[in-house]
Length: 362
Image (cartoon, rainbow, N blue to C red):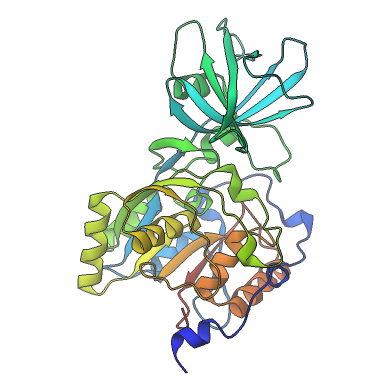
């Protein structure tokens, strides 16, 4: 039997990626130390419980570890309409010309052309506003297009950095704090544009990175600006009917060369996070080094680049559950998740991590 026939023997549906998660296991705060979180070693048939700082012992000299260097924007802004009604914006993308595309939470949507007042940072006398221009990316689009302005004429990135709030995921119940400003951001975050952190990379600190460098593990970066759609569950039982959200990515020339060099020396490409996987495999599939991707990775997917994956634990029925199942095998993933629940691992963005290798069947 060929590999392709193995990959297509079973037709997976949405229910195959469901599991029961005790709410108490959803991490509300990060571990005291980034690399002090737990690491479930899923590289063998039987799960092995480790600490994240053990990761270098599972890597080899010559491996290439690929990180997503996106930077989370303070993308959540609060304000009110001229009528006094409260409003919340979650800025998904900066468009240029001080225009942004945003999710809007409001009891009654304002009319096009309405200017709403946004709340500035405590102690600031800055007058910040947003004018609704229409929907995005078209008249039926799911997002809303606004132009942001303040007294100084600052660009949206500056305005968000000064007045915005950390866009914590919907399953984290507290308001953002000084801890979140620091910890819901990787230590190497560089390019602003994400509304959600590449959470597997949150476990890496400077000490751990230095240990990897010292043992000859190479590093490279891609950029994928994680969108709010990463938290949306798949709702169609037939996976082929699901419409993936769009995210912008970039694979720099230096990273392309680093991957070629890794292959030449026989090393492994280790992706940190599903966002790095989606970026690398989008590039491999299309040849497009920068642009938007809607790649939807489900069991049977033919991986071209990634050999190993560091990832957090994902939401039931999510596209990311499907991605890790495609990568390491559905049965193996479901067994690892059951092990993690039994051992009280911490789940989701501020939770623990796991290390996977690509299943021979993929």
